[in-house]
Amino acid sequence: MNSSWNTLYGKCNEAIMVDACTDTVFFSDLLPKKCPTLYQSLDTILTDNSIDHRLLTNTRDIWCRDYMPIQTGEKRFVFYKYNPDYLQTKYYQRTITDVKGIGSSGSLRLGDAVDLDLVVDGGNVVRCGNKIVMTEKVFFENKDKPRKEVQRMLEEAFLCDVVFLPWDRNEFMGHSDGIIHYLGDNRVMMTNYADFDIAMARKFTRLLEKHFEVVRLSYNTKRKHKHSWAYINFLQVGRMVLVPQLGIPEDGQALQQISEAMPRCKVIGVPAMEAVRNGGALN
Image 1 (tube, rainbow, N blue to C red):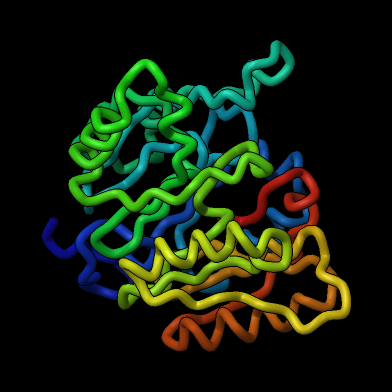
Image 2 (cartoon, one colour):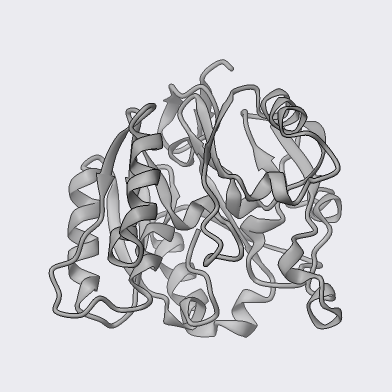
């Protein structure tokens, strides 16, 4: 891919459209109702920093990253089948948002649309320079196709190699964006996975270090909070980084470590427990 244009900061010299290349944030139109305090904070910060942000209509849950088309170039978007196995009960099926319906929204600036005939969860796609990082959950949700075929289809759609991490079955959603975040310059930040499963953290590290420099989040506290994983799910748009704050001792340490890892960015904490207690954060 050629370099992409960021209207805030100019040229973005990455092979695919990573977060540092973006200039607009989309939220589900349910977020102001479900998490009013969080949305007000986000709206204020983004407005004060002149960052365009919009509400998507006809959404069925607040986690719009999971079902929005995936941008891989300035005007290129990948559409997929959003039908995750963890939403298959009658109660949760009504929360499944149609990807193509969202993609046809007038608020999205779409160009070339690529249809990917696979079940994919947007939270399991982390764009990292010239690669995509996913967990192997994608193979389990597309069992009707051989693994090599699934990988080929993904790489053709994303126009890059895909790095696969093992699926931790204790994390039923299998989201890679709950494990890592791309920092730029071929570096990724990994959440404090070792505090919860040191063996899995080592597997992730070994695989990631074949492709990236890995920066690890860690916290000097007597007892690790069960929600401390959430800091990795920060929101970046251009050089603005919004980090979840949970009202726990790890808050300041997470802000400091992310700020040090992203010195060219403006890093701000946002009270986010409204969302985190429901299983997600800001990304």
